[in-house]
Length: 58
Image 1 (tube, helix red, strand yellow):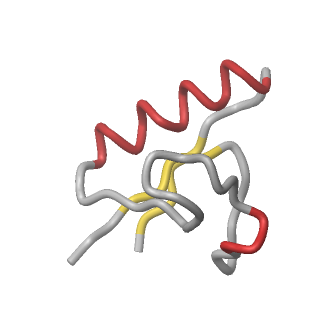
Image 2: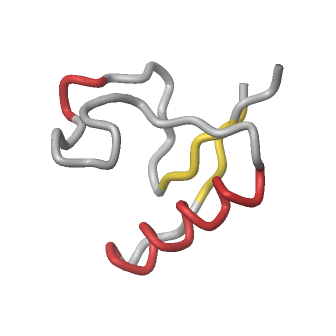
């Protein structure tokens, strides 16, 4: 199974300690099986932070 994480950072090891607890499903490291959805998350985050988006897959 391939899963994706859309972000603005290079993440070598997921860390749920630093996630926000008021997200849709609580604290955690959010993944999706949909590459397009991860791209949208990355782009939205990049726009808020004025950074470059990236997609991580595993």
